[in-house]
Every structure is written in C-alpha cells, then in structure tokens.
Image: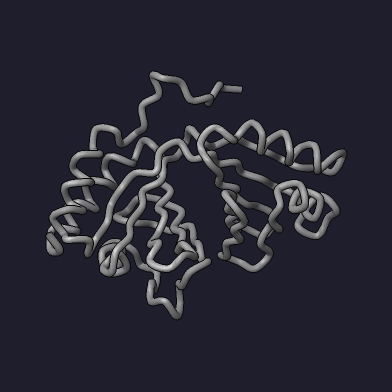
Length: 200
C-alpha cells in the first residue's frame, strides 16, 4: 500500500493555482470564494448496509453511515458521504486516513468489508459565496436549487465534463466541496476560474 503520510515536501495538486484562486476570490468581493482544501483524508468503505458491520463502523467513527441516497452525515471533524447502497466515502482531517482505516477494519471484525485509502487520488476544491450555485450550474446538469440539492446532499456527477463528487456543505454559507481526481484538478480549476470571470 502506498504511503500517503504528509511530509514537508508534500505538494498539493493545486499548489500552483493557489494565488489565482485567492485573486479571483478577492476580485469578486466575496461573491464567489474558491480555494483548495488539500490533503483531506478520504477513505472509501464497501460493506453490507444491513449487516452488523455497518452499525459497528458507525459507532467506531462516531457517526452513522448515511443510508438515504445522496446524503451526508457529519459529526465533529468527520463527514460520511453516501455513494451507493453499499458504498461510502469518509472524509476527515489531513493525515488521519491510517487511523480511520484501522478503526473501520477493527469495528468490522470478521464481517466482509473493503476499506481503501483514496486520499492521494483526489483533492477538494471549495466553492462558496452567494453565487456559488450559479457558478457550478454553468457546468453541472444537476438541479442545484436549495430545494433539490440543499445542505447535507451529495452526488457523483460531472462538472465541466469532469467526474466529481459534489457536496453541499451543511453549515450556513459553507458552500460546496468539489472532490475531483488529482489528474483533472488543474483542468477543473481553469474552468472554474473562467466561469467565475463574470463575477470578478
């Protein structure tokens, strides 16, 4: 298994774009806020949602795995995203992926479970501000109106022809997380900056 521990030399997929994202946020006067949230721990879980392991894993993590499609459960610094009937993504603070894996495997015991650290596979882009929904709607076919995709919702979808996991954050004015594969992060950032030009 690859070592995903953070080192002093770790460089996020969007480190080269940090100044451009910050400049766009400043120029928009806060109407749109763009930033990378690098190195978040991301652990994919596959197990039987109706089995004993699901409840045990929820207890070990301190949050239940969401059972309603395309919903999010958040407790403390952890967020669990429903990705499918037997699949979830647990997102936590940078550097916690090994601890999360250990806790999940230990809780599952002998029950069949798949636990995969995908932290290095994706990065996270924060899209926030009063025009965040409008900006994302330029390249996403989902209905992003708050009635259809309000706080606590998530979806695997395409944004600007890039596969992403889109998360409507549950705190007031927290905006959206866009979880994107690292290899497509630069392209998506360029698209977001271009689409945000009308608000700058």
